[in-house]
Length: 544
Image (cartoon, rainbow, N blue to C red; front, side, top):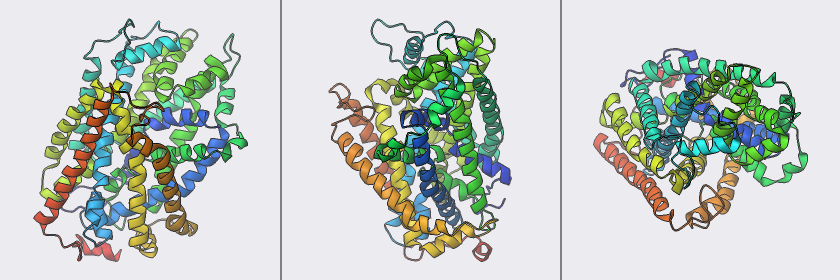
């Protein structure tokens, strides 16, 4: 594959490596934890109808748009949203609008890597059978809370205070090491190893779960678990909550609105296909989520706890399902098939690989910005920002119980994704013009995208995004901002938690200010003319 960032001497090594890396960026913890829980809690089959409509009207169009934005930016050696937006929209404001594409991936990287470290820890705990003997849902929730440092007064502490810090530090170290090795030498190599292992583990686990017999005293089967997820309740389709939940899941599952897909695509030339590669990436992700993600956790929970028990578990949240319920299931399986701890290693191992193939992408836009605009070495950017991420991540570890992580998860990991998406659609499709966007996506394409998607990208997708942004702004963002409710629950922020929430928000605002300063400095340093735009790196690519 050819690289459009000729100055950085980086490129994808192969087409399969590109697809696996893009799919790795998309396939994350949400595929195996959030998706089954969302489906079970939002009407099962009715939710799936809303989900696939959102995939067609939001997910796939945004996937192509982000590949198009990224590759077009790469023609001018811009692997970051400030530069990509400036290349599309020759206006002084364009570069500053792109700041959202710097703040969002940095913020998500910090807390996402911390959650990712939980999966590594529990893989180790499964291998050593550390939680073996805790055979109730309540007991495993206590074990999880102990690891998180949230053991209530009088509760049992199973871990030392430094345990979560140690796993977080090691997880961050792996991420930054991979990032420091570059696109082909680090990220692509990880994807070629991690994605096959992830799918192997998922297939084995799904096979074991779906062949489980009905348990004595429960009477439920894995088939009933699948029915629990997918059986439609058409009366629920009239609820706006289902449509919002489905749209939100699409953002989580495809990692759109993050800025990382665009950064990956900037290493392609106009001779490289993005139409077919984009749909192949989406198909790989959907296979992981719908086929495999929907066949493990909820069917297992139904088999051992019954439909009513699984519903109660689903209401408890994705983390309780993945980190409390599944260890109990593995111990139950171990009574008849003595491979329970191996299944635990595979479950948390696949979650770890799903997490790390996503998290390594999140600093890619920032790495590209400092390399391209200030000439810094990749290793310098990676390890410098790795240290910043680690330092700020310690706050998430220490203040998890005060809503610090929940606040970031909402503003950068939920609301921020939609903000990035609607911004890039307006700039790429409306300002750059639909004809130019459509032509750009089809440069070097191996397939012709159905023309209906041109209409969808131009009108339907931005309208869908505007509705989501307005709805979330009214029902969630404003109440959270006014402290009428916390980001992690419907209850108001307590006086005890308020200082931590204030610090959390203050850091995010500081990110915006600092990146705006660096963007302004970069444009002055490199003497860019906003009205004239950038010089294309390889003129042959314009003719492709």
